[in-house]
Image (cartoon, helix red, strand yellow):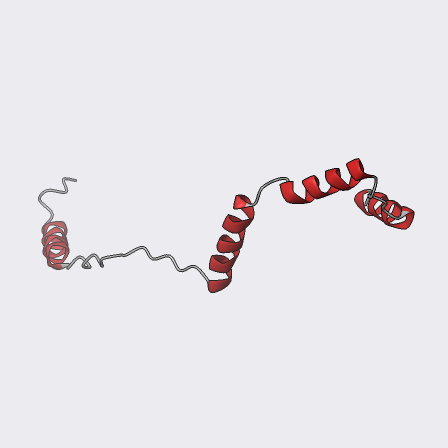
Length: 90
């Protein structure tokens, strides 16, 4: 059986071809990427920037303690020393 000479198949093919040509493709919508940053994230970023700009060592405090040690005036309490040692171990 030859399909080319079958009138029903040829009519179905013509109908399909006509319908396919008439199908409208959806228009592409323009997409715009958008990023929203919350206020708390902005505040966090400002705080982190300020933290990064802090010196690692508070030089003035170190100098004050050095001067007190040299003058023999630095007398930390033993309770404070123990509390600091215990809090750093946690």
